Amino acid sequence: MPAAGDHGGDAPGELDRDVLLELLGDVTALVGARSQDDVLRAAVEMACRATGSRRGVAGRCDGEAATMAAWYEVDAGWTQAPGRWGAGEGAPGVVCLIAKPILSDGGPDGSEDAPVMAGVPGMERFACVPLPGAEGTAQGFLAVGDRTDGFTQRDVRLLGALGDMVSLRLRDVAGDGRLRPADYEARADIAERLQRRLLPHEPPELEGLDIAFSYRSASAGVHSGGDFVDYYSRSPGTLAFAIGDVAGKGVEAMAVTFVTKYILRAAVHGGQLSWPTSPGEALQELRTGLLEQPEFGPDSERFVTVLFGLLGARRGLLQLASAGHPAPFIVRETGVERPLLLTEPAIGVELGAALAPYPTETIELRRGDVVVLFTDGIAELRDGSGRFFEFEMSGLLAACHDMPTADVVARLMAAGEAFSARPPGDDLAVLCIRLVADPGVH
Image 1 (cartoon, rainbow, N blue to C red):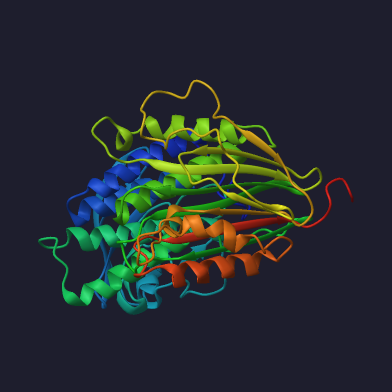
Image 2 (image 1 turned 180 degrees about the horizontal axis):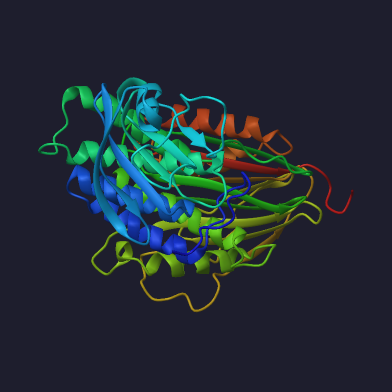
């Protein structure tokens, strides 16, 4: 199995592109699973690939015990080996009791009661996460191990995102597929957690730049879409960023969003692209990766809009490339502009290979200029007469030059919700980046 990148630090996932393409196939298998056992098996194989682990296991919790039916080894496949851990016993039993992840480096800690993965050979060093259930409980567990280096909080976040998808699929395939009334709240909570994982925890702090971001889900649960935002920085004062939206709803859209985000991360951090990253080359790489997958075949209606940008604070040069995503606003002292006249269709609308990088537009920024990016959820809000909020945004932003980005984001989100005649039907995401200092003055 290909290595899944450098796991020694807590930096964003730097996964190899080929591994990520295989992961998209794993996501397809997970989404297509029609029994709970198939869901758990698909999850374990995907978790092993994503973390570079050689062994894995997943099982269910019933409140009294955690159980497994088999464990997985990359080289040998599945081994039938039923196992049971009472609540609080072994790593699975503890995880299911406390509904929190456990990491173990396999070393002695002086306690005979330290949680272990008894019953699964070769898993002295492991990461075990809960599969979330209702009201902070666990409906199951997912564990990977047998890796040369230790597991980190980055692995926990990755496994947690996968666990959220798995929990939704387990509930979808349970019984006849219909949810009991008591399941809806748990299902909505799990979906909301997964959506949050697709968004950055907080903007990076970079000299010369002021960055703020806001996201609001249109509705709790899987009815929301697949918005995502991500940042990439490998040198002081230079920021690459992406904002995108996967068409569709539910866990299937969120799964594709998850892989889209990490294909871009692999391209930027994993060595496929040089740094500073060309926005047009980044979108070409993303399109190549996504269109190799059956999710984007001729019979599929799946497509992804993405805007990728690069901003150097020292020179004030902003480069933008778009695959069908709404064009941003540039708020200047002299007025509000709308760049990105050169755009390409969303990825998946046309299935031919991208033979050249996407067109990239370069804009010069001055001190106090604000770049405002957003997804179509806020642009397509309508008032009582049917007017789109997108046509009101320029006027609202005109007074925002040199304003802190947190205030710009708050102003735009509040105005959008006040403008809309009905509750938003899609997620609302806004990203603002302001150039703090005069270009060339350092």
